[in-house]
Length: 119
Ligand SMILES: [Zn+2]
Image (cartoon, rainbow, N blue to C red; front, side, top):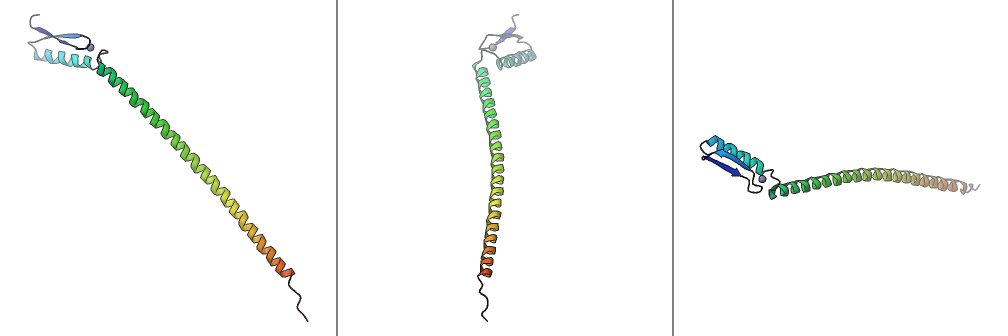
């Protein structure tokens, strides 16, 4: 074991023993300790990344919910605009009918007030 070394996690001390005479063994040990390092529970970066990922996920959820609400509001707004247009159209129709009735009434008045021609 005189030619062996250990690659060690600086956070928790987990070690991978490797043979310094074998380059492939060293590379494998290095890869293994890097892999461990990326998910070591004692690595502050791991929890920091998890925290940031959670924040990102929460924000994304919020954006999605807000977008859904905005779309629902847009639909409701379009619907109420359509209803208002219908009401306005109805009012316009009634208004034009009233004007028509008034003009007929005026016409009738004019006819009844017409004096008989003097003979
Ligand atoms: Zn570790």
